[in-house]
Image (cartoon, rainbow over all chains, first blue to last red; front, side, top):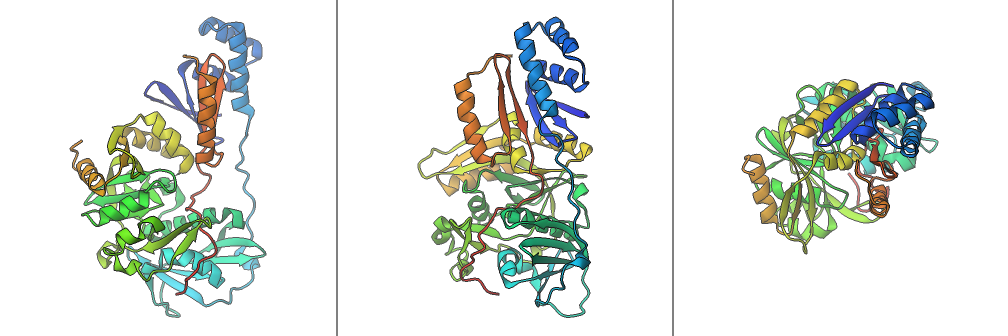
Length: 377
Length: 58
């Protein structure tokens, strides 16, 4: 098993390549695990622990057993199921064809049913130009429902198959496919895609993270009214080569609780249909894009901010440890399983200042965001 | 390594489980400290949304 270890603060972050899994360990633990991964005998391991690390026999047994469990538990689950050839799927008869234009690329997207189009198209409809038969496009995507499965077909090749319960992964792969095609890249070319929102001013950006409902999208929309550009909402890609954040032009989801607040500033929201997330959260799509920002942008990251809005909380901005950032960031992100990219990703997290921001007034959010961009904090 | 209190760990484990849909694991090793296993998302994901879309239309 190949190991990649990064020392961060007083801990060790270990990446297990075979499983694409991250462990956060203390020093002694790492030493024992390294020995266990060499498949040494129990006797050798006990001697190592009691002699080199001065553990009692009882504690040595506990830690060895735990390290063996780490080694053996949850072995690689990367067995790829074969995907069908797209030619084995029935031909699509629907006329739900759209051409999405961004970054001077034209992508033809076809949905096999109106329901699928309803669920997926509206996030990108602002990129739409009228579809004309026989017009030249750079790539094509088909999203097809067949026998209770959803298939994603990119340039004639089926790249994935999902059940309804995994629909959000299909949506994610669809977004990833668009991102790749807009940027002429492949999955290997990205360090990570964060479940986050990001805004920018010129070449600098701030990333907002937090659980669903924490106010990432609301903060993003607020800041676009105050001199910031929208970089991405819900899906923030990081380029592997430059380690810049890259714009992704999906619509912002505005939650029901702030419809009234935003309607005077975005009048198009008034007649926009209400949609639902998880059958609970009501939202509307907002498209804060002009023709000028339909080109791809690569920007630096000035701060990672875990955000929380609450009317009853005091305003605060607190710097936080990288380990606590990784604890929250890794499980919520897609991170490239490429070794070089993992190293770059960890270095990227180390290099970016990280904060928690709690606020009860938009003015505080705006003030802090401007200061973060201008290095005034 | 400093020992950790089991009760604190338990509380943290539950909240994290809820937060990340049972993706990551906190594990305690009695008297020897803790380690944390984090699994990134296996694929790119979007926030899920309901198939019921009232008032849709193109």
